[in-house]
Image (tube, rainbow, N blue to C red):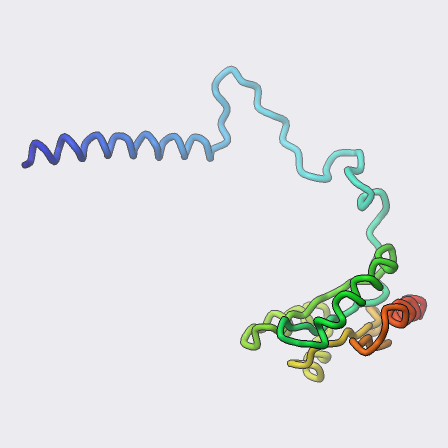
Length: 166
């Protein structure tokens, strides 16, 4: 029995040791000897812009569109396609869109997001409510306008553009 055990366990341990050594070598980033190491670069660190987003300096948003959303909300479902269409026109505008998903009522992520944006007071007033978007002035943190599912796409676009010109 002892002889049989040593004949099966020893090769398994040897194979495992070789596999672990191979993984450690692969994760070390080492190159085989005689192979030049590739030049380490960080994305975006080259002198040429890699896309249109890097072609100009980042602009701070004028408006923060805070979407109070939940999967179970009928108003959210009605608002979603209208809002997506309206946001296409505002894509080049300085507007930050924040979707506060309140589907999981036990999660505090929406509350934390508003606090991180300096909009914690909005959570006190709007926690648990869904189916609308607050357009908030990014500097003053005051609500400029509200978008609801009752509005048509054209009216949503007008409301959004008016807030951006505010």
